[in-house]
Image (cartoon, rainbow, N blue to C red; front, side):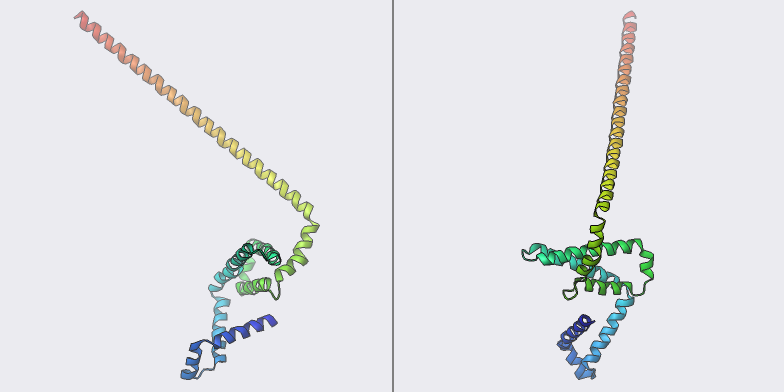
Length: 215
């Protein structure tokens, strides 16, 4: 809870330095602590019950980590941070998988997206490094104990996908060959019909010529 209180104090100190807070105190006699409390309460209400919180959770859990990961990849002196953000993406992938599979239960949890924002903060905060805690205590032991089993499943899955792809390619190639043969046969029939018509026309002309000569 200490890190939450520290952040509240930090936000309050930032708020009190804004120029319009003095204007409110002078003209409406509303203390800065009361201003901050009202604004915080209204913000929490919309965070807890408004659709805005869902979009905010996307920004916090995806877009912000994407930019932090980009900065680390561009840096040459961030080996420890690389591990932190790699583990974060592993935890986040598991979280998204759970949300997708158990989406019905997610929708009935009160203030789920607000809780998710706090959870992501716990995962990424330098003071807590929750993603490293989850990786070291849950993910890494499980993957190490089941590494061979998981690899065998992945190999079988990759082989099955490859076989399906090969069968699809064969089917496409066979259909292409059938269509090509059909086009060739159609062209041959057209040419034969054209030749028959030409021969008929020639014979008709010869007959006309013979009649003319006899006359």
